[in-house]
Amino acid sequence: MVRRNDRTAFILLSLTKKTNLLNQQEFIAIVIPFKDKLYRLAKRILVSSDEAEDAVQEVYLKLWKGKEKLENYRNPEAFAMTMTKNYCLDRLKSKQASNLKIVHNNYQNTDNLERQLEANDEVELVFKIMETLPEQQKIILQLRDVEQFDFSEIAEMLESNETAVRVSLSRARKAVRKELIKQYNYGVS
Amino acid sequence: MELAKIEALIEAYFEGNTSLAEESMLREYFKSEEIASHLQAYKSMFIGFAAAKDEVSVREVEIPSKSLKIGKAWWYSMAASLLVAITVGGFLLTQPSMSQEEKAALAAFQKSKEAMVLLSSNFNKGTEKLVYMNQIIETKNKILK
Image (cartoon, rainbow over all chains, first blue to last red; front, top):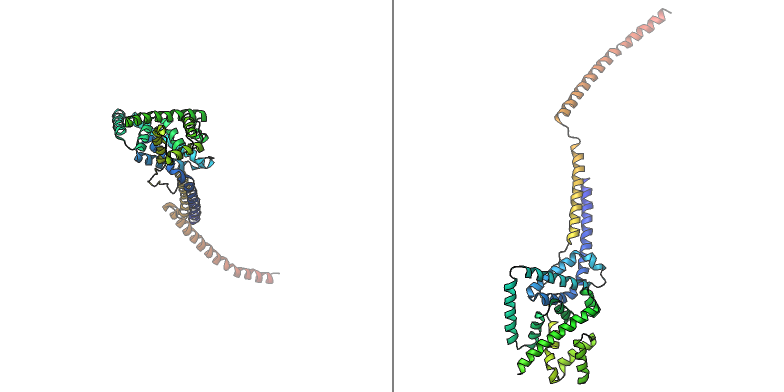
C-alpha cells in the first residue's frame, strides 16, 4: 500500500518537473528579448542603474509567477513594459514618501545643476534634461525616441490613448529643446 | 537631403506628428550629414536618444526553476498522499497487534478450547466402550427372539 503510493508520488513529481522545465524555457524565450528595454525604462525612471537592475529582476519574478496571464497576452512585451513602469513609479513613490525625500531632492537638484553647467558631453546633457522632466513625459520620450515604439503600442503600455501620448510627447520634446537651446546659447556666447 | 524637408520634419517632430520612419530619417540626418548651423542645437538630442539605446542590462535575471504556485500545490499533494499512506499503512499494521487484555482473553480461550477437546476426547473414549454394549444387545436379541 505504502509503496504504491510512493510510486504514484514519484510519477507525479517527474511529470510536474518536466512540464515546469519546459515552461521555464518557453518563458525565458518569450521574456528575455526585451530585457534591455525593461532595464532602460527602469533606469530612466529610477536613474540609478543598480535600482534599475533590481527592478528588472523583480518584474521578471512577477511575470514568472503570473505566467499564465502572460501567455494570454497578445503582446507580452507591452505587458512587461507596463509592469516595469508601474513597479518603478511605485518604487519612486515609496522612496519619496520616506523621510529622505527632502535631503535626496536637494542633493539631486544641486548635483544636476552643477553637472549641467560643466557637461561638455552633449549626450550626457540630454540625459540630464530628461531627468528633470515629469515622469510621464520622461517615460513617453524613452518609449518613442529611444525605443521607437508605435504610438498604439505606447498607448497600450501606458493604458492611455494615442492622442494623449502625442500631446505628452510633443511637450516633452519641446521641453528638451528649450533646455538644449538655452545651453547651446550659453556655449556659443 | 534638402534642408527645407528636414526643417519641416523637425517642425512636425516637435508637434508629435512624425512617423517612426520620418524620425529615423531625422536621426540619420543628424548622425551623418553636414548639419545646418541653425539646427546644430538639436544634434545632441537625436544623437543622445540613439546613444541611450545602447545601454544594456548587465545583471543576469534569476528565475526560480519551479514557480511558487505549482511548488505549493505539489507540496500539498505530497503531504496529502503521505498522510493517506501513513493512515492506511498504520491501520493495516496495527490491526494484528492486540492489547494485553485481548491477549489474555485469547490465551484463556485457547486454554478452554484445549480443555473442551480433552473433555470431548475422554467422552469419546467412553462412547467407544459402548460398542461392546451393542454386541451384548445383539447377542441378547439372538437368544431372546
